[in-house]
Image (cartoon, rainbow, N blue to C red):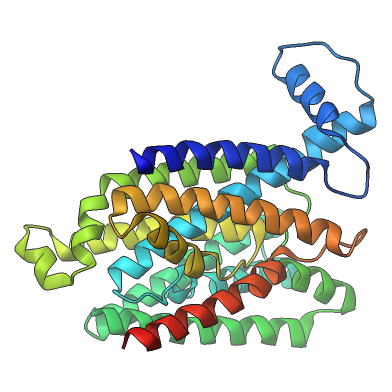
Length: 335
């Protein structure tokens, strides 16, 4: 009962947060303007609205807020999966090197122009992320496939692709290209459109459904591979399935919004504090908290240094690093 009430409350809070976030920015937009634009586009009214305000709300700020919510929810869910599979409370989606691979793919397209006409920055980032994930799986399998080996393979992949990204920027990028690419690498929701909303929402909703279906598997993995196997769970197959889900969600979100850190690390711990470790409750709670967190971080990042927006990845790091320190200190006290 308490979990249901928190879920309903979280959905209402998220809806209100998105509406308020739309009003924040250099151009003055009121909640009444937001209401009128939404009712018009939903076909529920025909209220006269200035074309400029209609474009700001419907074409710019609403897609941005929805993508921010999808990124927060998706990265939070990926954090839940990684922390359960690896039995490491400090694991997050980027431990698989996916973010670094996406950065390399984006830089190769944006700076070298490889496949720029067909792929674009997002397409290059997505392919780079999947290549990095494939490398991690290969290295982990060659090293034995244990949890520790997966983490070490992720660290190696992260360092490799980070070095490749730095090399391409250093050797081939001019000042304008470097500025544009670096802004994306820091995490940015500038220029997102409804196609991005549909893609991110579909991937995150499908990933959430898969995680809820595998909630009992994630519960078992939290106690170790041997206990999971004793409960009749195919450890290797289920681990691979959940890692692939994590990779696809992370690759999609990073390809749209760039590298956004600490969401998948911190938010699962906040959800566990509120609702406990059972994944049937933890997954939706983390998704809602992540969405709320990202909507507000993006809104504040947009207005803090107006008219120049702060990259949203910087905002999440400024909040996430202190939270990360708190997590470390709590683990030390427990020991």
